[in-house]
Image 1 (cartoon, helix red, strand yellow):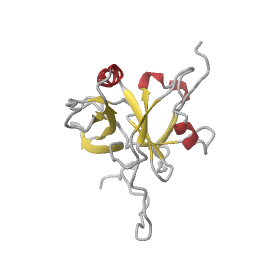
Image 2 (cartoon, one colour; image 1 turned 45 degrees about the horizontal axis):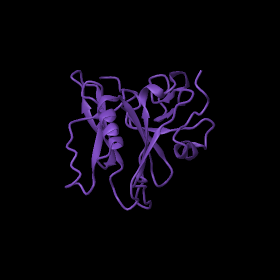
Image 3 (spheres, helix red, strand yellow; image 1 turned 90 degrees about the horizontal axis):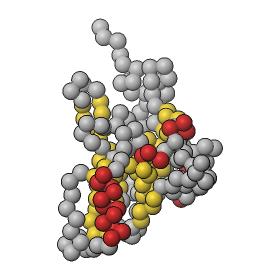
Length: 201
């Protein structure tokens, strides 16, 4: 008989009969240049064979002088959201394609610069649920735009743009919950765009 996989064993159930789960993101996101995350600051907590606890969170700081960039839309809209797809690799390993949607508006040079940068770089995108949970997409390998059509006239002034994991670089884990250092400052860090305002050395 085969030995059960530690990482593939259900550890608890869920009773959703009397709860109203958070189901909406605030209509804003913080987009971080992946290269601006300080690798020395990263603490990734996920189940392993040595520590099978059901944890899916990450702590991180940005490099000195770096900040994330806030994108905000109307709170009555639904353009800002994160979601993910589960697939299997050719070898049978579970992998996840993260998707992060933003609203880009206008035909100014600034809008064109944003669209071109999102298409050429790698980013981590952070959202906040209405229950205060801060969720991180693309932390391991980064996200970039796929093919898109930017149609200002038919789009009411802009277009929802999706940043996704590359097919050759999916994520190993579901989107991670952000944990601040010290704990309890998650929403403050999000509200501050994860800014690390120390002068660059």
